[in-house]
Amino acid sequence: FLLSDMEAFGIKTDAVVVHAGKRCPSSIVLCSYETGSRTIVHCNQDLPELTVKDIAKLPLDTYSWIHFEGRNVKTVLEMQSLVRESAPDVTVSVELEKARPDMQVLVKNVDVVFVSKDYARNMKFYSMEAAAEGIAKKIAQRCKMVIVAWGVKGACGRSSDGTIVTSNAFPPAGEVVDTLGAGDTFIAATIFALSRQRSLQDCITFGCRVAGLKVGLKGWEPLGEYLPKAEWINTV
Image: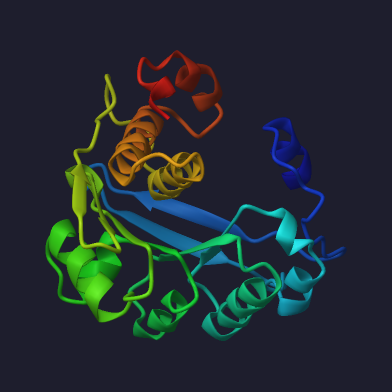
């Protein structure tokens, strides 16, 4: 099911690691209509995480961009180092989402850092501008860009020369239907724009627009219909 679903959306699966006989993880999301909060109950019974050996098998120098999530820190750090050694021209990014201080080490080998509101607030930054500036100076001095998503406030980006740009959020034309995965949508859209060499301002604005469109739709499948019709789609 998972492979066929990805292939239906044009996602290449030739590099996917398949563990025969293992069970698929599942998540149950409890949404509060009163507060807008989400509680996720996750269950992974026996599916292992990706390993450095899995990454080493890939033709890394054929990729233009490799993105990591801040998960099992030690292994991800080793993967990043491998990419840097094997494919120094590849752009590398990482997402710091969960409020875990041990993830700070994951920024030392990357070009672009995506930071969640929760992670920023855990570092005592209470606005997206302060977070972008503070994180760039405190833990991401070598990164080309620090990008902070701030929910309904939009997003902020800081480039290595110290320039800070911001984008408003773009609520859907109708009501908010499904916010699950809005952050991932923002990151994916922003990386897409960055990979096309657009300005940081244009990239985070595009990310906010796509994320805003997504939350007005159930799931991701309708994006395939509505995104090409958006009047701003050709901005990147």
